[in-house]
Structures are given as C-alpha cells and as structure tokens.
Length: 249
Image (cartoon, rainbow, N blue to C red; front, side, top):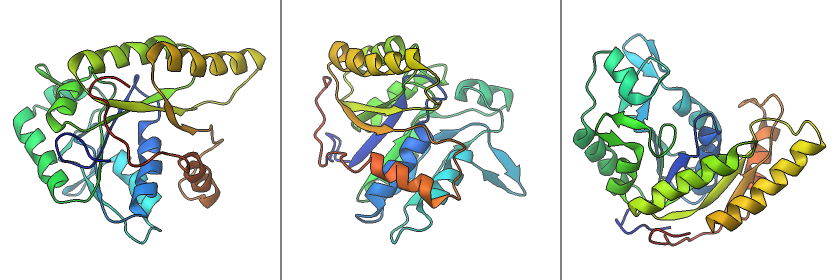
C-alpha cells in the first residue's frame, strides 16, 4: 500500500461530483482502521456549517459515524472548511478567503508523515480547481499517492470515467483502479443493461480493474449497522498491498 512518495495510503477522486466518494472513503477507512490507526484527510471541504467557533464538515461527520465502533478509530483532518457548497476556488472567493496551495499541501503532508496509513479525499474530480492555478490533480501529484477513481455506475459513466483516467494518466498519476458505486437503484431492464455494459466497457477501454463495488443502499442511514455491513462486504476482496502502476492501470 506504499506510494512512490513514501506515504502509505490512497487518494480518492471521482469521475465527477456526487458520485459517492465520501461513502467509498468511509468503507475503506473502516477496512484499514481494523489494521491499525491512521488518518483520513479532506484537504478542502465546502458546504460546511459554522457552530460556535468550530466548523462542522459533512464528510468528516460521516467518517466519524463510520468509525466510532472501531477499536482503532482514525484521526480525521480537514485543514480548510468553507461554507458555500461550491467548487473550492469559488467557495473561497465568495467567502473572501485565499487558499494557499503550498500551505495546504504542506499541512496534508505533515499528517501523512506521522500515520501508518492515510486516505485523502479530493473535492469533485481531478480537474476541480482548488485555486485558479492549483487543481485536485496538482494536489494528487504533489502528494504522490496512488489513486482510486470513484465511478457512479449510471448512464454517462463511460465518458466521464475515461476522461478522468486520461487526465490522471497524462499527468503521470498512478491509478490503481476504480471503485464502482451505485447512488441510485436499478429501475428497469434497460438500466441493468447499461450498468453491466459500463463495467465491461470502462474496464476494457480504460484498461483498469474494478477493485470494489458499493451497491445501492435504499434510504442509507449512518445509524443502521446493517448498512455498514453491506459496505464492509463490498470491501472484503479489496487487494492489499497494491503497488502504483506509474501512470497506467
């Protein structure tokens, strides 16, 4: 599970927004936490709520709920919290806040150095801007963690997935594989065909394995142990350790 940078862990990015990266991270967090204490990092969280003198970060709240019952709960860390639910560069600009890309990268690296493993979740997809001159992809390259690409298995997944893979690989990121997530139920036979074809087509054209698949969980609740059991089962066959592929999958 070690990367070329020496930081053991993974960077989780998506083939778009609202693909379920946070629940994917929560499941991987639960799996790795059972093997010892680590850290889960959300470098920039938008859509936060200010409560007194503290920020409530939605992703970290779900991670906390996912790991409260574990014997070695991970440290949860979010260095930049912004109120507006928008791309980080816009949320920061509208808040009159300047994100310093160098300071942000250094803060995340400092956490990675002192933990036996780490999960870092980006905002949106690889080309989401953190600032006008620094994207999620730039952060991936700076941290040099192997990448897991989260794909929502739905109509349109082929194009968004292959474009994301192309951007990651052309930049030299090490892509380990995909995690397929289903954020909506399969409504009819056509949708069944589309989702099966997505699996075949993306793995073939993208030359990339599917490392885990998260099923659609109706009316998901973080308070329901049966729901976490479904997510745990999805990660049972996740292969470890994994070596980054140096720009190819």
